[in-house]
Amino acid sequence: MRPSLALDYRPALFSRSGIARVTRELARALGPLLAETGSPLQLYAHALRRPLDRAGHPCSARLGQAGHPCSAQLRRLRLPGRLLQALAPLGLDAWRLSGKPQAFLWTDYVYPAISPGRPCKRWLLVHDLAFVEDPRFHGAKASEVLRRRFEKALAQADLLLYPSEATRDALLQHYPGAMRDTHSQLLPFGLDHVPQPGAAEIQAAKAKAARLLGSEEPYLVILGTLEPRKNHDSLLRALGLLAAEGRPIPLLVIGAPGWLSEELQARLRSHGPRLRNSRKNQGLSEELQGGSRGKVLERESPRQNRGLSGEPQGRPRNRPRDIPGGAPGTKGGAPFPLAWTGPLPDAEVFPLLAGAAGLVYPSSLEGFGFPPLEALLLGTPVLAGDCPALRETLAGQRGALFADGRDPVALAAQIPQLMTLGTGPCEQLRSRRWKAAAETLLPLLPKTDE
Image (cartoon, rainbow, N blue to C red):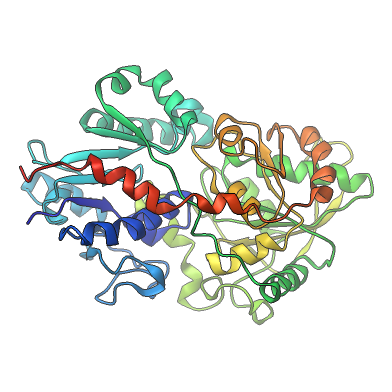
């Protein structure tokens, strides 16, 4: 029996981005449902690189570790991406290399080639159109490359999936013909991947943050890849303005380097903690300390992964210090405690998020935006960027504030309220389950083995 569905699992192996989250959780939810039909989910994972967490992903015969889909069949050859592209015209395309499935789900902006004429439905998951909406988010050259790749996949797609009405509206605005001619479907993302840390875990996370920041004052978190649309720089300026008024608020920056972030990285590196080769940071992820694991940031480069998020140009340095919040030309900027951890695994992120006084997520554009919803689920209030997707996903949620993420003054005006907002865990969000996303996809599979 031919497999009914394969998906590109590579983002889950090589990144900690939101796309990686979606890929991993969809596989985890789809695996058991497809196994019941006698047609195991196929995980396309061909790549030369090693996974970030070798024991935490189904990258060998030991499937199912750390909750990964033991009912799925991993297909992984150690082949470089360029060779895979060269093999496709010779008949070794993604369809053949994933067991000849009836449908293939493209999960990221890297689309493994499927030769014309294959009896395979092509499903395209569109997270956002940042590269079309504003080329400054990725740079003009990279945006053009992403746009061409996307439009080539769009022309082949039999089904368009989107995570929010905001992404649907962007598709309608920029590609009305494709939306008219191709079936499209909202894919409801889940939140049941978020654990509820215990009191001891949260206290340990607060102590860890205090060591990193050199301050025991309540701290804020900004979580996500360092890239222009996330507006880290605006937040640094806003906190500099508050510090100049005598209110220095500690900030913990969690996330991997990304697009066009060299200047921001340099600023953070000069004041953040060295996570590698430091015995003082034993509570932090092993991958960010010493040995070969310290090279994880290089392995998240889109040059190597050709589209997966994260473009490292360095890593955090030395000990935590105060950082001048005001950039050149900003009046009144003053120092405040700051530490950059780099990317961290969930086991460390969620306790740190639960222990924070607030999450600031000043993004200018999202397709969905996991961190604000994860924070609210953990009982941490949120100051979010005022953009359509975040307005949509956070609508009616207690503990959510909004401000223009590009405006340091607007952020500075809201942060004191955020620090005193306080909220309990938003448990109704936990009803958003990944199984519902998987069950949305199953009826869309081809009915017969053509």
